[in-house]
Image (spheres, rainbow, N blue to C red):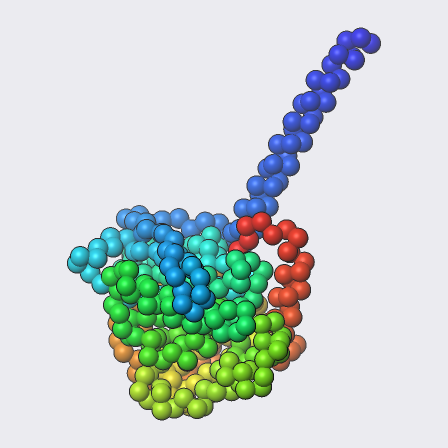
Amino acid sequence: MRSHIRRTPAVAAVALALAAVGVFGAYNYWQSYYLHRGFAPVAYVPHARPGHLETVWFYSRALHRQADYLVDLPPGYDPTRHRYPVYYLLHGSPGRAAAFLVIAHMPVRMSNLIAEHRMRPMILVLPDGRIGGSTFSDSEWANTPSGAFASYVVDVVHNVDQRFATLANRRDRVLAGFSMGAYGAANIALHHLSLFSSMQAWSGYYTETRSGVFAGASQAVLAANSPLDYVARLRRQLARYPLRAFLFCGRDDNASVQVRPMADALAAAGGHVRWALYPGGHDWQLWNAHVNQMLELASHDTTLPPPRSTGNSRSLTPGVTPLTHGSGHHHRARHARRRRRRSATAGTVSA
């Protein structure tokens, strides 16, 4: 009996240690899954070389404060010999700029495509659209009382041109984003046609409602931030500054019902527009499946000026129709519910 009593603390200690290891392992698995969304990291192909990632801090006049963005310089970046086109990418909500690194693995993908001669070297720029640094915020990448985030993106463009060896003209800039970032890419590009000649919207929506940062907005402000409402008035600007656009969405996404109307309206106003409805919903399963396609498209679109519009958009998935149960206006309510559920587990989150 005495021997059994002596062994009990030792057995308990071992059990406690094993339990701790199990909890630690489970936590690491959960954290890795949450960061990478269950997608395996992308490996470098033979002969691919990594680029150089850095965080840049600068004073943003639009935000009236120090602000930052991430920049990935392509393999072999040499400012003394070359100048480079720039691919600007806007994250969604909940989310942060690092989502393009830890979920989409865009720098690795770009290095691989360059090594395979499938795209030209580009500078990747990832602005930070979070309000107060909160992953769960929803700035809409717009100029609102919560911050002038659309104008901040313009500040980023000018700062990138000052710091890095860019091809500082609209033909060599592509603006893209997913979800909230897709809406932001469309809204910002259309309001700043002299800056961008190409735009990509991954699962975007194109009308604003009185919710979130637009809760107190007037009808005029909503209209000025709803591309589907104002694009018809841009004929003169689009004639001077032609725009090439690619819009895609999952056909199960409520916002998919807005894709063709937006594509048709932009094409009628003078844009060169292609669009697609792919199988899937509103998530990284869809976006990750098309990251390489978007990188190659961005590279291609900077090699030639945008063609003049024929007045009609072109579908890459003819005959495919949306499979939704809404009008596409419920994105923000859904994200708000997600933010409330997940804010208690804040930590380091990407979306």
